[in-house]
Image (cartoon, rainbow, N blue to C red; front, side):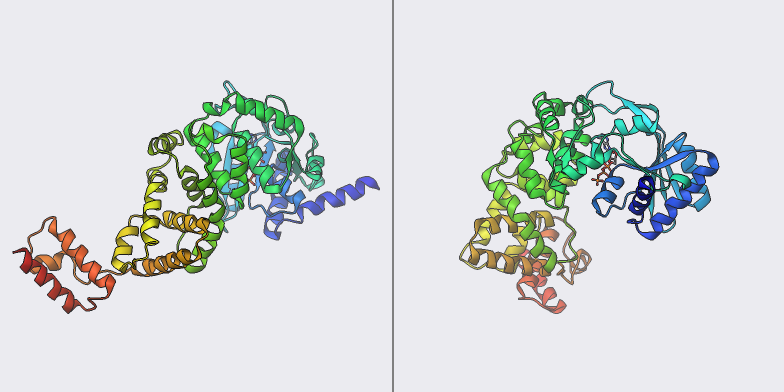
Length: 440
Ligand code: ATP
């Protein structure tokens, strides 16, 4: 009777999935039966099913050859397939855009802390044991006779109920220091606590400088994932309390003005999204820009190198510092600025830098200046698309020899257009004629 009730409850877990996914998992389970393989849904998606949270990922694992099974599924459903031999995983993309990862159950060994693991096939139990935390180490069987059976060797369900993050073994952070950041991410996302032993191990791992051994891209990935969380403000404060930002640079501190800006970012983002819905903001980079505020250019440059940021990311993070403060000061000036002056001041700023500028002003709690800045930003965003009717070719046909003065003539012309002193092409031509005349 009890088993029956469990069976019902466990199948019910999967029915929390959207019908399309549920149907597909049933089919995959039947296909595995045909081949005599055991197949499971595994990891974060199982955790989120238990928490009744949405999760778009379908991570499957197969006891046996996962890649061969992925090929079979891809053939059967006409799905696209990408195989990663080194990690014994494959990714499928179905015709309706649905994605599924299929892996081989495996054990992992770490030749060196912070390095990528060596992998070899193993049982499901071992596969679950290599995972980061108990709450991420559960599986749900998909084979028809066991469809929906929850497999929880390490007490993950109990830890979910107790709202705690727990590693599976003492050497976990040593094996993979990215788990330090993952622990904080899940802790903050779910409002859980680190189980006491795990907290101690995390503190030990942090002070043993294991994070230093992570490559730039791996460290960057973890930091940006932290900053991509729904509420990065608390998460950043937590990382700062654990003194982990020193691994980005030993002299990178979470300074008071950076903290104020970080706290104001959600408000700035909300205003920005409501006014300029077409602007796509790279939120994680925006938070990193705020974090870097107040640090010296040398520290910021070294941090950029440590995180191996892309050129565009690096440009953004570099701009985030003193230039924003200088721009703010000018915009807060009591002397009104012409639209062209505002344009020149802001034109090199990315949208992320503009949001940070706004966040800085919000943090200063000066209502009049904030209102003024919002007005400037709204006007600037509108003016940004203004172009002169004349181009370089027109200048040429008007007799101006190609050279560096093209830029300055077109720049002056644009300023007039922005300020509304010139509104027609005829006026543009007259203005240029006058300029050329003056130059002669
Ligand atoms: P999110 O909801 O942020 O995507 P997730 O738990 O789904 O979280 P993923 O990074 O997608 O996380 O990884 C999927 C699963 O792979 C995890 O649930 C965990 O079981 C395992 N895993 C991922 N990264 C690690 C790691 N560094 N060490 C051990 N296991 C990991």
